[in-house]
Image 1: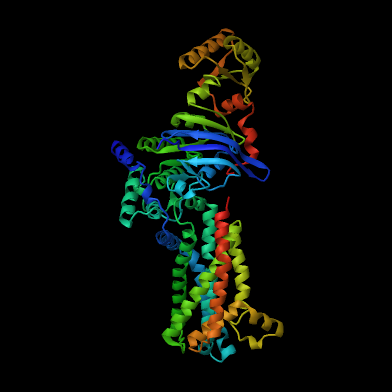
Image 2 (image 1 turned 30 degrees about the vertical axis):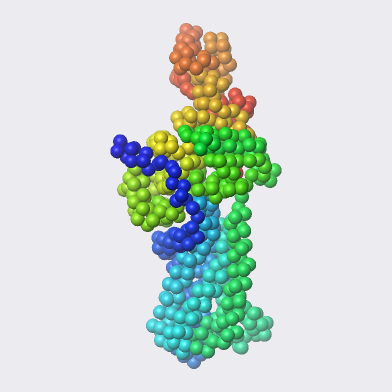
Length: 272
Length: 329
């Protein structure tokens, strides 16, 4: 131990205060690295969110495809943009979950007592999530292509559709970061996200054409934001997107960030 | 740089109807270990949270290393590290990853961060566990890593909130050794603890906190002298002898002896000045008197007064009386 004692002593001399300054980009990217490391160490957290849409894509295509659209191949053209949306929406909760864990386990206090740019923890988790969205989108689209999905919009359409879903996913994440700071346990966050998102995904135009639905449900599907998003995604992939469809999604995204961004930061700072 | 490490005056923080910190006055000089000693719920953690800029006080002022915690929290954060009561490491990440994360957040380059992580893992005896996830670490290993993380860039002031609560004796002494190393390097340490022996081992000065106020402060020696130089615990072979043994001891030592919950045990506080020898003499005299009177002694021990006894002497109430306020306030 004698050699380590002297080594440790030289390691413990304070006075490098110049190092300890907040850095907007450096801190955010370090936090994103942390989020990705955690995802890599705990892949099961991402696995279930991806498993469900993959299962639905396979199951619904072959189970109902023939009955709903004449053939599974035809139905896949309709269904795939919808399962992509479902996949991403289901994993938007992950930044909120990790923030909730950080609060409950004291990591938040550690970061708050450090000279780091304070929003970095949240921004970093969200950047980390963007990578998750990309992986999930690649999985769903890859599966679709394997099953014979050939969108009319081509590569450009797919890339634009992925870009739009990333923007929307990033915006929805802020709802969950706010709730992650309000709700007591990660389990509560998880359950809430499931109870909200599953009905929203089903009572939308993800699986069926709303024209066949009874009036009251039809009305709901038409105002459901998931429907608007799916419509825009389908149009982008089919190369028929209108400015209004995409514009609606971008506007909704901006609105979500404008409300839940400051709310999250307020909750984060306001913790006593 | 002659400002004290910490100057706090009139600090108040209430949570609902509980005054967790109630007009606290505290000055901590630079260098060495300063102990904040008190039972659960006394206000130790809230005080640390205010000083570490995590909690805003309702009233009062606090300056840490010359910077006001409310007006300039960033300047405070740049100079401190906080190691909480519960290790705040990322359990799913490895030891190395936790250290590199901290180093990168504090502005070290990727290479410098890796190198620093390696040095600290070696020095803290964690090199073998470097690549394992922290969730597989023992309590003592976690605490060591936690301290390593907080000195990745050595702070001028380190807050250690109950660093050894829940650790086994060997891990406790390892943590103490680390704290001594840090102090030799020039870091000031503010340590909270519920254990008088811990404060005694490490701290140059101690402040005793109760109900959110500092009720006594001084060196460990001064504090113990205010309570008595030692505590004699006697366990009799026959519980039936206890009453007569109590009278004999009180007469021999000139102090009050208290019966303990154990029906065969007695405790007497010895006031024999500061020297250990005097307390030993007094204890020997007491034992001699008992055996001469034909009272068979099972075991006896001369020890330091416990925190309980210090508290009883300083406040007239037991440490347990505070317990319902809970912890982590």
